[in-house]
Amino acid sequence: MRRLMLCLLLVFSTGCGRVFLGDTQKVEINVTPADARIKIPDRIDRDTNPFTIELPRNESHLVEITKPGYETKWIVLQKVKLPSVIVADILLTLGIGLFIDIYWGTWEGLKPSRLDVTLEPESAEGGPVNVPLNLAESTLTVQDGSVRIKVHVLE
Image 1 (cartoon, rainbow, N blue to C red):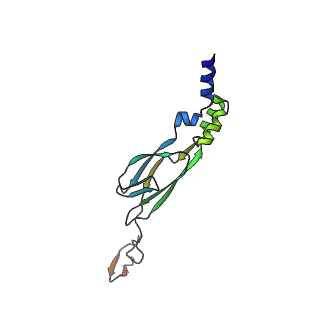
Image 2 (cartoon, rainbow, N blue to C red):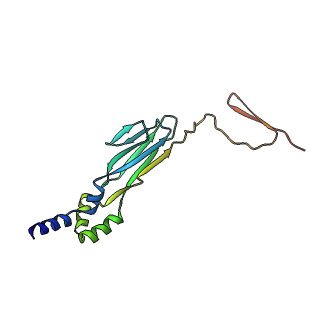
């Protein structure tokens, strides 16, 4: 009888989020172009991808993706409460496990859990800019930084 009570006490004193999901979550990161630098402060600073990293689920993380000649992107891996963990804690531990998961932050997860990011080339201010022109029978010439458009009228 003592062993049964001890086992029940042990089961009811753990949170479902901590037992089934653990303290960390895997996040997949895939960036185009492949040699872009990926930084998560106090976690990683690398320029090879794709890769998977395990991050603590009880805090949000800021991901910085950079490459010279491309616009920098910032993405927040936001911690969100997981309803499935809350329901499991209430049903399986009679609510006791919910307090354990709240205390340890294991009732939360990171969203998104997969990053597919494409960096956009920087637009050079004062440099050449591509402008789509849909002109029939026309020519476009560039000389000394000025653009000359010659349009032939169709009759």
